[in-house]
Image 1 (cartoon, helix red, strand yellow):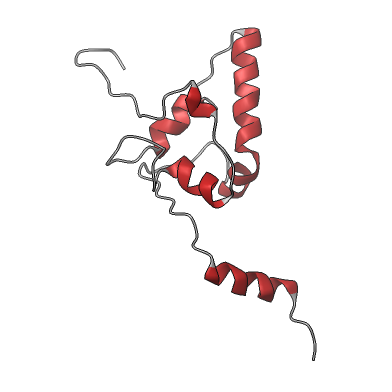
Image 2: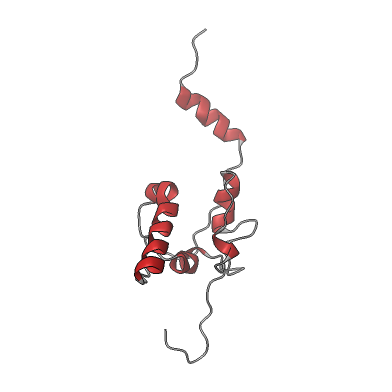
Length: 116
């Protein structure tokens, strides 16, 4: 009996595993294609952190705040929680998120009359 190809075995295995719930509530394009973000988002965030902390450069494009603004749930305003954008994938991959020990996971609500 011939062994099944790896791709078939992986597809069958994936069928038994609950996939993460990822809801993108704000339309539009991300800063990079989905596959690149899945693999490299941490490096992008760390690079942005280094540029901000060491060089004083604050750029919105790769900022954690910008990620939260787009990916926070419309219901909770957060990227954390059972179905939160970040929590869902990181739980699926068994990766601990430590970003939000210092940073807020909540979308920022503008103050009335404040400039945007």
